[in-house]
Length: 361
Image 1: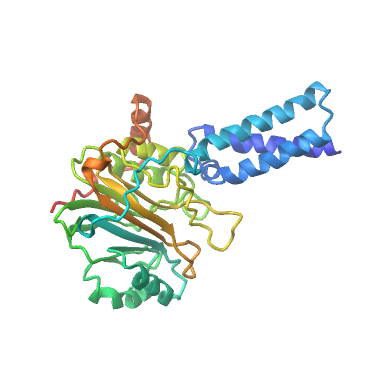
Image 2: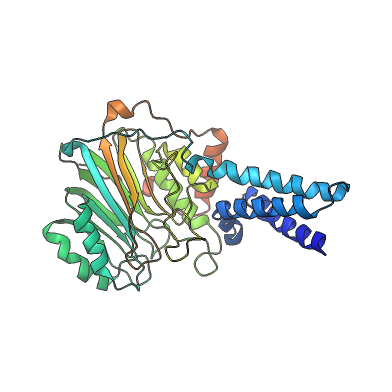
């Protein structure tokens, strides 16, 4: 009986590892990109059980630990860059000059959450230059508007469908525009922020809808939105930041493709996962809230902040504009196959890179 149970769990681990290798955009297949850490942990426990309870002198039973070990190594390959021994992708810059830094606090507030005071307290404690909120409706806007005396530059799109977005900024925001690139009820925000030094920084704030049985049956909408933004920024000569709840994990094939096509860097690489969702369940957490940036920046710090009553933890990142120091930083690079894959994903939706607003100072 134990052999049959172990064989069944082995088949499940193999299926959960192999299914995402396909290019299928079905929600349940792309959803398996998320729990790679949990699958690896389950594989490790399963491998221990196989070695303890199977008769490894029998050939069929020898195959099970081999298959499990292969799955474990494959899952580990994806998450390895988000473990501390891995080399940092972004350089650390201590004690940044105030004029050259930009501090961004991003928070998916959970629309039904009514603890706005907790988020406002975090803002006043950490003093970000830019606050980005997701899932903010008219109620949240009425509470957050108390910040306008300190954050006079705003972009507002309150919605009652969990896709409302707001940006509150100390820094001037030029040529700001809210767009609905792929879905008519899912916005993104684009603006040129001006640092205290006078340096313009192109900003893109996003919250594409996830592949799920309650949202989109496939990941094509999310993937297309991410990749048109990636293609729109790849040739931008100046500094770029893309941030928000991307409803994808850093180690998924789609986010890796976004990084390859855009050329943007991930400050988490070599520093940790910074899992932000689900705030209420320690055993099921993934990094859904992201910030990517061009090589013009180095990192001052990155922190996951305390929960504000949402199912997401807020994230605080401080970057330093230092083009000379950042010039040697290297992220992922796209080959011809990557570019073809990106084009194929974009072509599935009625959106093109030229549709993305290109803010100017």
